[in-house]
Image 1: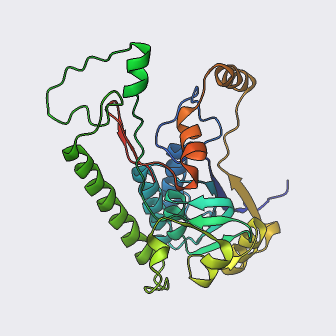
Image 2: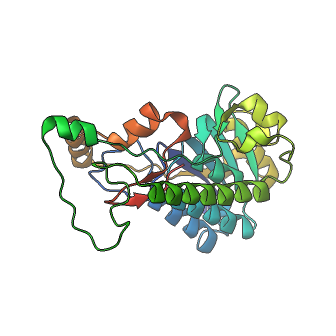
Length: 289
């Protein structure tokens, strides 16, 4: 009987689609990564698998998402790094807003040349259905305790007090975002104000201004990580976090997806563009980039 030494692991963690905390087997955002699984995987690497782990690649293709989940993921990456495990980011097509916050927490960032990144800003867009509801004869009755409890109610105009409150909240969140990026990427020039005004950047601009470290593919990122760890690819096992669904789960997801529309994703990728969404509604106040 032959003994075979156990291979070390390189974790490949995909973060695709909109970044959000909520997940469900019947989630409308079928193409979005389950961020709770990402956070749990990073925790597992830092606490249980650190002896077996050579490094981690964070593979990103995301327009951004909720502030809290983006920040929590970045903090978990920092925890993994604190255990001496290198973490490298690889940007596919797009890595903006909350996605860039996550990438900036890594040791090193690769990006495809035609990718887009940055968009370090916060935006809020609240629908106003007041005129439409009048035309349709639809009325909403609100019963509340607390003057601002129905903040973001789409059936009425925002008050000036509410608008000022939301603007202050957006600016406060933006400052936290900027502070995190400056701390993670200390070579970003201080004399280029457009870096922090919310606009996205090409990979060449990002490289020139130290938002990323190198133009390269996912496999360039893997080669860099292996070289840094001093191991060869034949001696490691790639451990992916991609969810493997059974036949029934896939069928159920297809059935749900054929009847329901993912309005949140349409909003972020369609109407609002790549900057993401900072959304505070009366039903559930979620902050988005």
